[in-house]
Image (tube, rainbow, N blue to C red; front, side, top):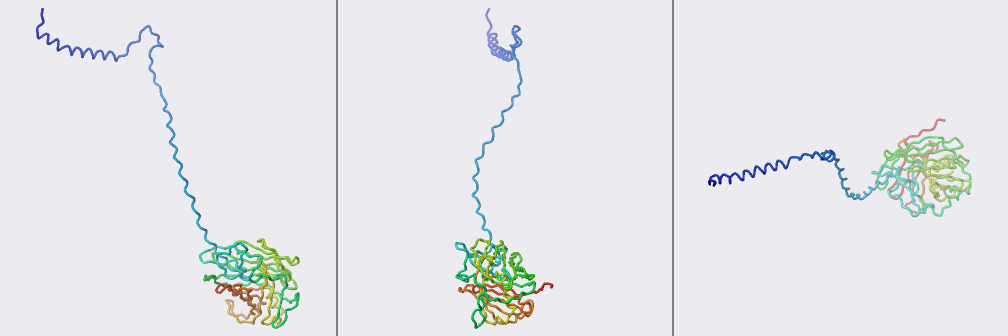
Length: 379
């Protein structure tokens, strides 16, 4: 029995649909889990487990390339120290320099000054070095000779002559100090303290300036029939240098390692020399008429030289202290025109203590100390 054409077409139309249904059932059955056969043991069955896995630590960060070190900074040049102010009584020390050593870069007012104040340098400089011998004043000088006095128009007194002395009483003197160095002008306060008990003496001079500190010199020693015999002399600025005097052994020894200097009776230091002149004049001013020369060995804290003074006339001075009559003594320079020159005025009314000291170096540099106050010690 044959199919009608309509039934045949309907069957052909159902074939794709039937295929799609069978495919969907197959996919569904394929995705379902299969049951475990009963004959398999329990431990052979598939077991699903959940495990917590720890993530591995992160890799370390890459090492940064070392940064090249910056080039070292060049240190800034330290400001040049200012010079200390000059000292009042000895006032200045010979401006000298040791062999193979440079002189201080700043100028000095007068040779006896370690250094002098500078306008833009509020500090205290170290003392300038001195050589074993001074070419200007000390070259060839016999520093072992005793004091030598040559009255005006007469022959020198025999060496070793005993010159009478009368020491001034203990006192404190205050000064106004002024000066100039290479066009720089300055002013300061200064003080001289003088004490003795008839056997021992001590003198201290100091000069100080605001922001520049203090410079001080000290002399101490014995009192003998010839006057002052220093034992120790110190000069203190930024550092301290000193001299020790062994008159019996004929040597002056210096703390800075300079060569010993030959000395003899009558040797003085840069501070005691002014007080020794006071003692000589006070004992007999008539023995020293104008024109008399007094030559004696004078030592700083680094070397010894021969100093020469010429006695002048009495002068009327107008000082901060007031009107004063004083005997003038001029310190003569050495062979060189650049050597120190100066004057000291000794007042009879104050037992010939110095009331003014003026020293000059070169053409323009100078220091001038003028008495402001006189304070005698209680008797």
